[in-house]
Amino acid sequence: MFRYVHTNIIAKDCGRLIDFYKEVFHCKSIGETRDLRGEWLDRLTGISDAHIVGEHLCLPGYQEDHPTLEIFSYDTMENASIGLNRCGLAHLAFEVDDVEKTLQLLLQKGGSQIGEVVRTQYEDGREAVFVYAADCEGNIVELQSWS
Image (cartoon, rainbow, N blue to C red; front, side, top):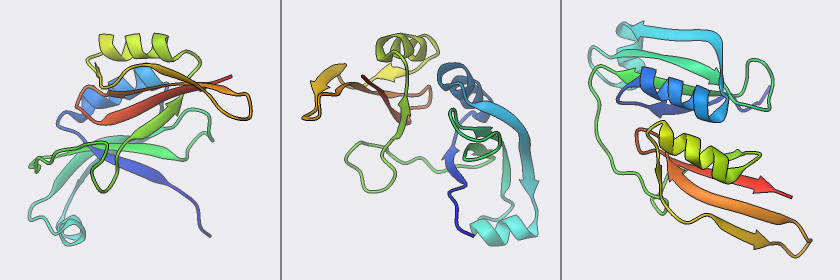
């Protein structure tokens, strides 16, 4: 069997970031919280005395338990810069009913706007609205709507 399971975000404050994704993007708790430590985790991560806490949130518009957004915090973490044109994971994208309304909620909850809200017409006649923003910890998200 092959299936996509989750995307992981390492948060400075996993509780705050979990609340952000629940409130802004309608992600739902599925009862999968984690408080992990032990020799097996040290071996898996290559980090001595690793300790992870967090939760899996079901992404909106999918099954009741997968795919999930896995938001964790480690007791000790590395800092790295994130950017749209950086190699690796660049952003998470969410299709929303109203880009401007969702952007305002994102800003109220501690997020920030990166670029301008843009509207564009595709050759097939569909119109799209897009904006890049960042969650309350600086992870880049794309908001989009289609008509």
